[in-house]
Image 1 (tube, one colour):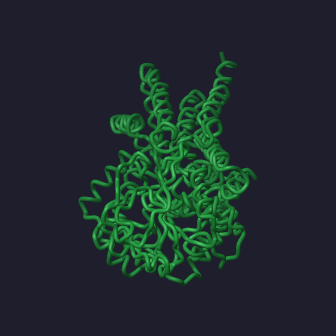
Image 2: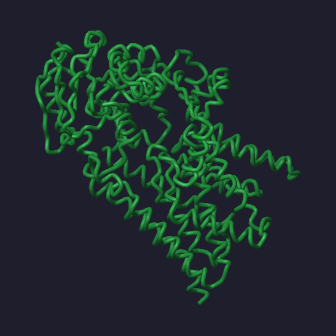
Image 3: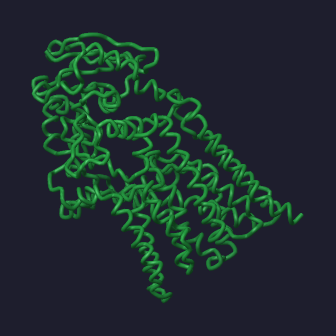
Length: 559
């Protein structure tokens, strides 16, 4: 019986790794026929990596630009560091192979990190292997934001390392992890907030009389230093690039107090698009049950870690919501960096916090007797099944596949029809993301980037000025953020994915075609017909259809 018991955990780990592998398999089996997230993924990052790889500027100078986008005014630094492994995955492999490998790295490391953290520091009891392995597997299957890499999913591994060092362990493995994690994560998409939390943790130890613990402090400094080296382009842009950029017109403080209260509870129970945890149905009840038994039995000291994380979870949601409170305006007007840097992202700590609470809640339920012990595996299994049904292939099955989205064959036909070298003319898109044209090698005046010259934003605005005047929503969206430097129209609004099944038409669009031509614009790719094209100085050259594409492209040329 003892031997069998000892063999249970390795078998569970093997089963979990096999399940993760099966979960990843559609990316490699389906390839371009796979369905993956569009928002902040297909519409941006995947195309950026492709453009960067083709530009020859992966290791470009600090003042290098990307010629294919916005007339070469987009800085190379806007695409991040060449020391990030994800950049090289897309440079070396086809898109979906790179995407699958990126998912695999993130999910296997997420499993390993959460398992090590639970086993050593949170759920060490030998009899609780089902909780350790089950929660680690669930955490690894969460629908994280793909280009975030290990920015959130790597936090458990980092916390395991810091807790090891804090307790006096100085194994080379700890420092290897601190060195490698910055190569597959982002400081602004997670680890700035994590390292800040670690700094507060260290300071709280000092204030509580636990000593200065210099190895712990220096390990935090060391990881921060590695991140600053890796993200040297970001550091340079932040400290030395004085040219006004699109981030300078990002205004976040606009919600009323009660809007923030509602957003607090929405975030607490439903989570956030970029750090999805799928915790509402099964995990949240487990957390509440665990807290109930702590309150009932007065286990405040015995379960102090759970209690701390329980309240921290809510505080992080409140912080996220109230970051958008309009009461911040006097501060943001005085300290501009409060607008340009998104401090709301402290809530990116929540995936780790929530799954630690899940493990802690299951542990407390386990202690309530045999009847409750039987329920624990069912909670775990239910959460894993829910996550399996939250996979990209299932959730995004009604969206275009990768191949249908980028429509390589269709855009090759357009390129051949135009018959000019792509670098000799500029294009814009209506009703579809400019990332599609960029992925296919076209030089675009429009783009989705959150860091480009403010002067270019003003210049591009002249093309759509009359359309913005008609519609307060798109005017505010463009003027007070502008990350999507798109050819917005009043009739289409903030929609930019009109498939070939759409019956939408543009009847009264007003485009400043002269300004478009002044910027080098020659062709317009529209996903919908423009009824008054002639009045806008545009002529319809050809309509392109393809069975392998989600779009019907109306090719207009500026007269």
